[in-house]
Length: 392
Picture 1 (cartoon, rainbow, N blue to C red):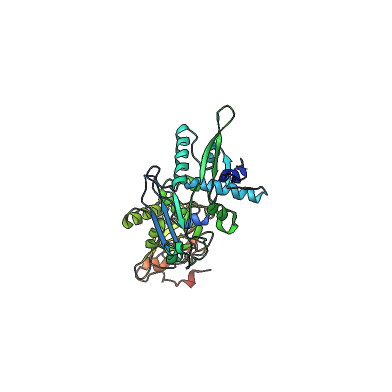
Picture 2 (picture 1 turned 120 degrees about the horizontal axis):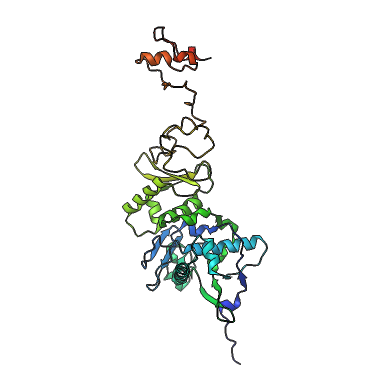
């Protein structure tokens, strides 16, 4: 009796056709929090090694294609968005997805020219050829297993799971040989993460407009750890450097982070630096006041005063990028739009009065804390009044 030939993975999976609607972008939290991708568009073959407690990650590339980049990960964001949307609408999902290059390119904000199609094929090749080994979401290792005793499992206490970002992909053709889209199979590790609601986050569509690799990686870190928390989150710069998997020296990495803080490009978040008493530098981030990042450069002449009537808008003075307090409460006050400031008051037209009423300045002593228009034109001969005497 001859054994039946084993069916391929493609034959065992039910085909899921991608939804044509405009979907909210979703990202897997594990991919946002750990170094799985190259942050540079240059050809990288050097592995990524990361280890923290029970979490171990090793990403390897082949010389022919190089390592999958953070731009290539846009395809995985598209796949996650498709799977989550279909599940939420009661459709059956699968790891085998049928789509068209046009649908992927338009979703991630790319062009649809011949060069864009070639780049998409190259990205799919990198995702398929890049291999990942990780202990994330894996059961404890069996110390009696001979294989696990000789692997990385004893060092982390967890089993290693190995996969590629795309198991396989193929271009389809119709009966006449014309291109008819593509099919791709995502790995089970990724698919399970996407189906778990607790492991997926919605991201801002403006993410696809970020051009720098570190910018994209930083947004995903910020979105994962900061989320919608009012006080945001803080990271030690050295720790961030390790989590990035970057090949750049630390000084170059820190320089690029400071440049990003100056530009404030991350949608929905404000970035700034803090220095602890011991001298340690932290990158801090928090949700932007009006739901979008405050511009690092504002209208001319708006250092402390903003345009009249812009209290609910984003025309605010940028927050200082360097503070000396771990709580970052020592921000520069915006005297016109900061409702919590105890310095907010209405000053008479044409007068720049001091709230301190310094005694050494006779003229200021005569007019300090005055709220009435006739006080502005009063003579300097009468004796000075105290702060309460001028209030009504």
